[in-house]
Image (cartoon, rainbow, N blue to C red):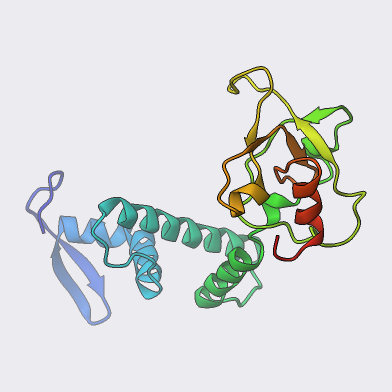
Length: 198
């Protein structure tokens, strides 16, 4: 083993069957790197990174893998009596990501959407349709003008309408629904909240 901080000396290490001589760098590695080895062991069992040409993808997937493992350790520390294994934890995380992909689309009660006033700041448009769009309760769905932010250009900020975008029309709207969907007043709003395939 090559080391830049250790000298080439040997130390006696106690083993089950007696004392053994080992290099200092090996002895210190074994003493201080147990947590890293354990983390590498867990990460190797259910590894996210796959063969890919782009090194950036590998790094990003490795970081996500480390973050999931760290969250597993936090979970185990907060729930010491839990017998949940790492594989089951990964499956729970995957299920949560797969089923709660519309959480951002449903505004919480304390968000800016509940503030009184004629208009709201525009959050990023969700990539999926909101679950309650066909509920029939049209009082939950009202259009509000998009608020001008410091980054928006022009006097009246506008964004692309969801219904028009599906039909490959690039038309802009100045309205946003309370379900965080950008829609034109009238036909687009009506189609989005009443038709399954608008």
